Image (cartoon, rainbow over all chains, first blue to last red; front, side, top):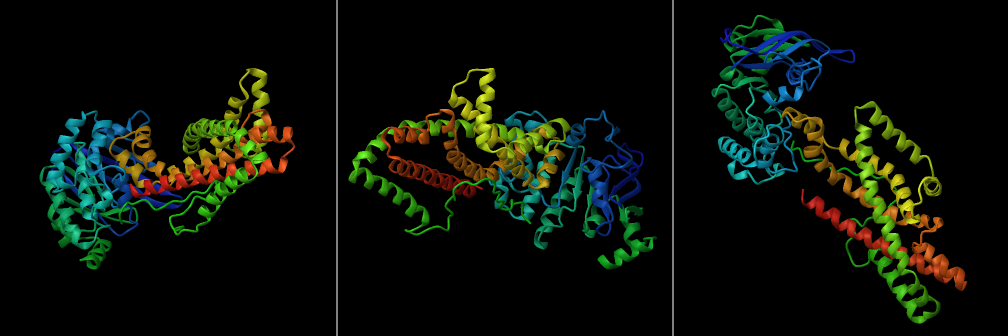
Length: 247
Length: 261
């Protein structure tokens, strides 16, 4: 475990309410530098909301979230500075359809990171090489398969050289035969030491990559531990039931 | 599950029907109307040069003015529409409130009244040529409708696009400029084409404030020669030809854009 390391994310007692529905009910959790946390749970359990509150795509109603030591919901915090350092990969890829694959990777580098076009393109090509899509650089996202689009989306996030990556069900919209290629890229990213928080239903990935597994139900964290602990000896009934259904 | 945008159709205004791709074949309504109008005009001018040919010689100056008013107003209206559309979706209360107020007021006043009003209101402050005042009046009116088109176009872009841009550290302005607007333009273009044609037709209203547009030239000719029926026949046919011509061009442009996707 990496308990002696710096905390990348420190969430304390966070609450998120939609109307009368409590999506997050006093959730506290940390992600340490370099740690890979996998968040699982039934749909509607609040795992995506939790992930999205880390880069403030969802604004929490109560509690506090520190990212790299900065309170992201503080009035004085420039949230764009946080988001530069915390990349996100979406279930529906969300590539920019009017830009080529290469432009998808260079846009934020140039606009946000203020890199020169040449520098941005070199970085982009290196990353496309790494996800095995260098030959698609000039293609538009619409011409790519779902798996390829998601690999581009991961490369796009990496191009910003973030300190942390959030994955929101990155393989849930994919045809089964394309899940493997995306998981392989994610495993590669994990091996290189990236701090990752991953919401997924891929239990094999959780077992192999996670330092820690968080199980959520009804807006709360009900079980938390190493993959061995979680998959072999879960203590909570809800977690046992979930595992028996999904495995 | 690709993020291909759904084909959005926004219909505001009363532009002439832009020919659809499905309208193939030799005898489409467009072809019958367009070539019928040209043929009819040619036949009249040839068979009865007096007064038809004389009318045709007299009105081209007016066509030019109609184009000036239409082009000037559409350009200004697009700028106004962009500002208004952004205002309508803005979280800034004042900006949003002003934009909404503008749209509500303009939509509630007939264009003809607006033209009169702006002409005489401007006249009290500065002396501007009638044509400029006409362009401003048309632009102010169409800017409000254009604002709604822009707003609908922006709102048609999937929320995930904004989220992806924000997640990369872009601010709201960068997101709008680099991600949302370039995509919205493709959605906005067809209804803007419709607005253009509607504006072209409505520009005939400016003839009442001493702007020598196509209709005004016709009125001048008619009142001197007392050939009211003949003159307005020619005027109607010329408007029809121009409108059909532009609707075809816009239809082609639209197809180009959707192919480029």
